[in-house]
Length: 429
Image (tube, rainbow, N blue to C red; front, side):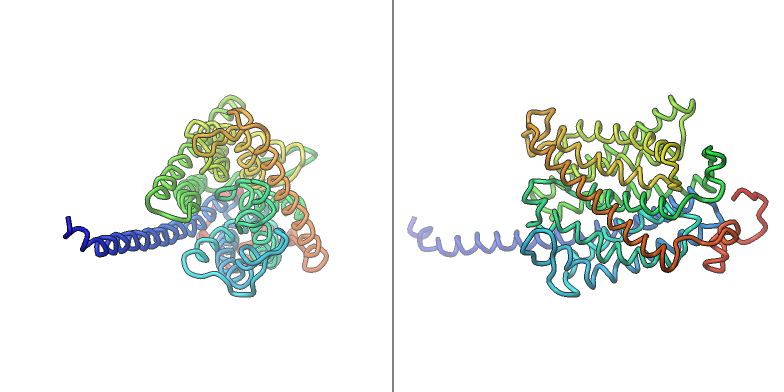
């Protein structure tokens, strides 16, 4: 007994050392998880490139690739220079944040940068085939440097006004996707439709040139989303490892349900299952769960994704046929409309641990009010700022190319090259 008492300080010291080591390992694993997740999100740019180019004409494929390359390049620099500070800087009012230029470091800055680039690239596909490259460059800079980071800080900075309200957006259904999606809607409206899209009041289909590329792009995005949502746990080890793993599982279930939701809807509506809409359904399922992936049961995720897959089909049809807005790939519906749905569904059947926080599982209306407030705030912010930016650009440098350039294709006229050299037999491409 005396031996144990005499060595008690050493035992306590050893226990403290073990605890310190365990904490250091957990921190290192968390950093590694964020880096790997950020790399997956970076790879999503390849997915966006394939989806956007595959769903549009081949004569604009180089232009699509150039815009996606621009987004990651410009986004990386602008977000590092000012965006991170505008999103995670100090604040006195919960609305605006700032701590000086060139803030952030390491895995955190890298991971957050990838989200900024994603918000910008959502706009690219919606205005494909008729927009000046120079105009898009300017908007991409404004999106990644100002529009996205300021609004993002309202919730993710930790002391923003939406945080205080109790608003939840785990990985960005509103903060990333709805902001990008509603900006895309404004952009498509301001730029105007592609030549031949609306003839005598009728909607004319302009099919994409390669649905296989689009399918491959969706698979890449599906894969990258595991990092997008799972990495937003921002930690790994112990309970964090369990939580992040669950987020990845929940994300996959919602994506699968969204794909089936759109597939079944088009099968009933069109008479045959429609590939492009089913692909958008998978993306809609992913967007549907992005806000609530940390606050949803498996069953709740499946239902959210399934409904998101149905919503996106009706939304694409409504925007195109009723509003007469030419969104070339359905970006406004997938990211904007469904991003709003993914935000408010937390207030319907979301959970916090084992406790329900939605109106349908005993949580009352408090969370739903918070989700509606936040979702509307991000939609209004994106719409108003995008109208201002595109309005200024329209009055100054102009938004769209000439009719001759559009008919010939943006690849040759804007970039001096084509995606598929050689003789082309299919004039519709």
